[in-house]
Amino acid sequence: MVWVAMLGIWIWIITVWITVLTHRAGIFTLHPLFQSLSLFFFYQGIIVLQPTETPAAKRTGLLVHEGFQLLGSLSILIGATAIFYNKISHSAPHFTSWHGLFGLISACVIVLQAFFGMLIGFETSRDYILGDALGRKLWKFHRLSGYILIFLMTITVLTVTKADWVIMVTSKWSIWVLTISPIVALIGLLSLANPSKIFGR
Image (cartoon, rainbow, N blue to C red; front, top):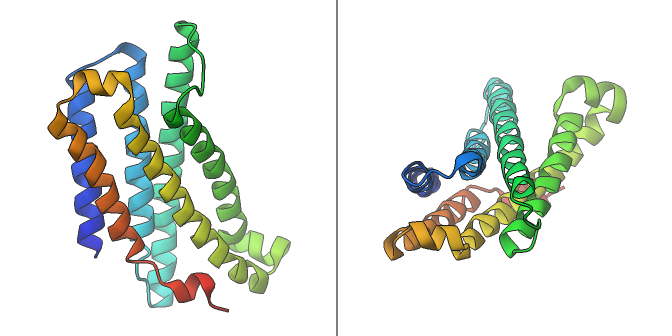
């Protein structure tokens, strides 16, 4: 089901970028561009680990995973900074919509997820802080919280279809695409999850 996740996320990000780049709005433009990139990168970082069977594949997959998560984290930081600055420059209130609230929650979870991932993912951390055995046991919680994060980010992008600016610059067809494609991508991604690696001993 990798192709389902990839198809959904590609259709979604292409639609977002076409919509934004044909209706530029100053510094605000950076917000949807980089936030969409962050979700795209996070998807790639998860997909690259599905599955990795051999030790060599696991090591390579982990390195690529870390690279994509770093790019996703940097992208969401740029996008969040852009919207924060945009609201300040217009003296607009913050976090007054479901999109803003879910975006804030997602950003906070990303920070926690990143630190947690580094703590249990790096061999040095496992060897000298947690111990290898505990680090490996905690990995399943990192997996679970990662899927929860993707779910939260999907809710965030779905709520943006109710925003005045999006309604103003998009057609009903685009709204449907922006609604259906992230759901399809999420279903495809969740179908790759191995419950035994999350809930097993």
